[in-house]
Amino acid sequence: MANTNTSKTPGDERDNDDSALGGGARARDDVRIREVIRRRLAQRSDLDASDIEVQVESGEVTLAGTVAERDARWLAEDLLEAIPGVSLVHNHLRLSDQ
Image (cartoon, rainbow, N blue to C red; front, side):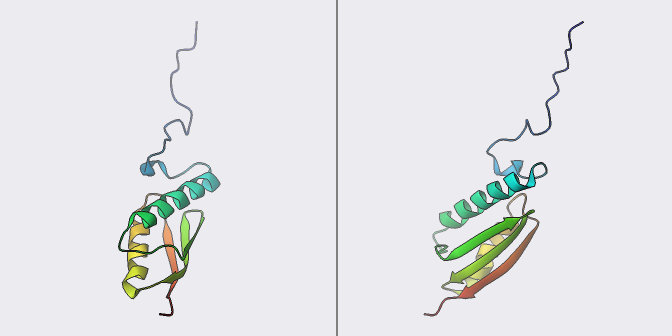
């Protein structure tokens, strides 16, 4: 008798949706999380993210670099905490010398 098992192997449900971040191959997930973060930061007209460096390791995000305004530090952090797959944000952003 033929095998009629149509169950998916783990990972088949993954796609390009932000909600697909989590579990599985952590290094690949970290790359995807970083891409989502960079895209979200770039989409904000009220945040100049050109001097923000983003590192992701095991879902923990580290922000480094400079921003022009104090509120931008917290805005960047708040944006990241809402991204699926982000477990912790280390905010090392500093105010730029104006």
